[in-house]
Figure (tube, rainbow, N blue to C red):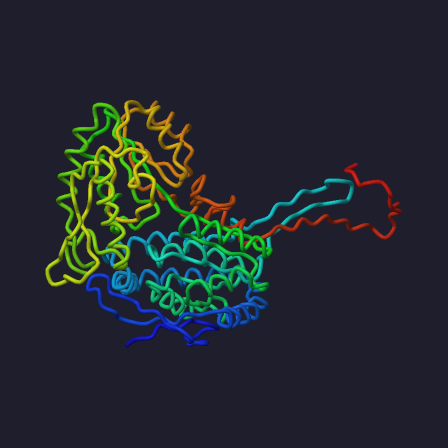
Length: 498
């Protein structure tokens, strides 16, 4: 059986190889590989390689760094299909969906290709007589990323291109559930001309994470995952003197007003709720039906949920694949049962779905639950599966209050034909990313990604301008070049401009 190794200093290595974990094909339920699980020694080896590489990479020209990014971007285009199939085989999402995440990740690489403009400093002439001031930014050193299973290509691509293009070296700890994409990307970097040790991959579980959070040679940590783990990462890493980006969980609401095009709204909410089997931090998990829109919206959503084509991710025509593990399948199906027991109406029940020829796969069908209240588990918990809850509200103000009372504030959407309602909504909701007639409002790479409240621990969003600031620190230089004949008197008072 295939063994997936770490990638340290430019090549695969088993490292300590004290333990390994199975990697499943979610569509069949069968083990298809094992991944080595690293610990302190493996993280230390990666830090040593990255620290050595930083000495030269941080001194490389901006032209050299951006040329690697241009090469890397082209390789991502050329190998999109291959990488998409690798992701589909380990995660379960459709190949087309996997290709979509690669494309969105590649947009960050394209942003990194243009850092020559973004990294320009500023210059102030003659701030005092014969004195000028300028500033510039420098890389931090060795930085690390800890990323989730649901986007094994895109989320890491939100981190390492920004870090590497600004002159840092990088250690990636991907999810052990779908680890192969990280190694594939590492080899693309090698082929793009990235020097050995600049990009490293250490596989593992909590021991590897803890080693990253406490290692004195790592200057910053980027994390995307659940809120409890985001809080743990933030606390541990900051306690050890590191910068931290820590993005947590979500409960994303899509509000539908009576003046919306209900067919349009339902079509997009269905895709936003059930795409990638709901295993997205930006998935639509709650539809808030306002006033007279409710009954008709539920009717359309029911029809569309029953039309979703569920099957293996690599099968033509599949729209939704399996969940990533058996445990995830059981958790999601138990949540549907709990919702019914708590008084919700199960309009579409996806439990117990069997796909011909893949009876042991981790499949569950789309579930649609109506008359959900904010006290129910189906509303309060991040289910991370193909379950759409319907909450009914009497007005837009009630819908906004509902969203603002939720502890999460990652993404939200409003479906309406009213500009006034849209403006009021986007100004009043306490959520970081907002879509108007857009169900999954993931910003472009030149904007930053991040939520509010329990969806972002700390204050550092990811990629875009915030990514540049996170992976660099500023220097300000005040300069005087006196002429030999000048007689300058040093003052003992605090210097001022004069």
